[in-house]
Length: 394
Image 1 (cartoon, rainbow, N blue to C red):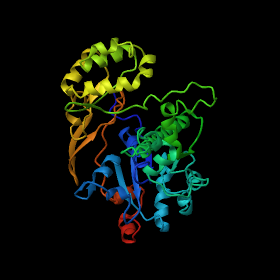
Image 2: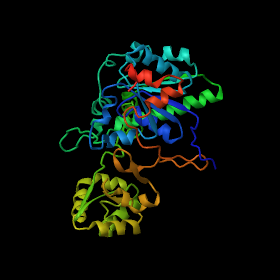
Image 3: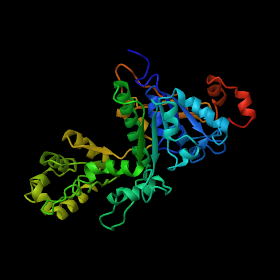
Image 4: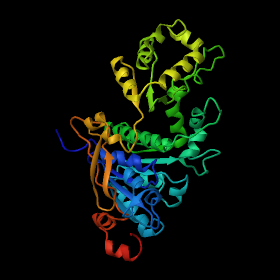
């Protein structure tokens, strides 16, 4: 078994900010790639300043930028642009998520850089795409949740009010699409099917593609005579028990019988009104009312014990503050704890995929602003002291 990750030897330039690009680059770093995070003087990546923090390091920046080295360079100076061109000369991947046209104005667009390095995989991430009626508009995750239809999926059936996912879902699904697309492009290059290429990825497109497999199980059928039913997740809700909440599922008749038993009323499954899927649909209002009544008479401990006995999919609603103590999470060794030189003690999830021959590792702690600037330009054969005194690097 080698100790090198599957992307060992791949060099990535991460010019992106926030989450959609930085998380993609961090995934590649965890998989063994060398990643250089390139930031501009001043604020750099705004994630360095948002949210919970200690010692000048925020939790959200640490969560999206481990395993990288930090270079702060002024790309508006000719010497700064030259630093980038030198970095690009032997890079495999460049990731940027500036608004369309910004990189071209700096002379760092795909055409500019592929002329220097034809093997470069250049990734452009934006909210709506590089062109079209909305391409110029600034976005954040919640805006794409609305634009893509994801927020509509979260509409409360009783009130008709849509709501947002309280996680940056669109940013993260975009980053995962980016990471997969990058490795596909590298594979195509390795096989000789292509040299470098330009990957264009819109958050809007990624969010729609993410939602479509299940949320659009009705919308995908265009003929008027289609037999339409609610989506599989349309009725997802937490179940209120006597002392808290759980989530459980029952699709088949046997699972429904198990759920009734878990609620302490196995006889309910024998009631002709609920004995099969069709009758349960026809008597849904009565069924739901009874199940709510039984649930409020059942404790979490009793429910989960019976659910396991009767093979019912069920879980308590675990809190993030406690998730590291859950026995299965402990068994899977999901988390690592270590000291960050700026932020102190951190708890971080390891990369989720486990490779038998090229194991992944949790990358080095997220870097300070410009922590490696001198080191990186020196590796390029440039005079770090002269560039620093000229305000090119910071």
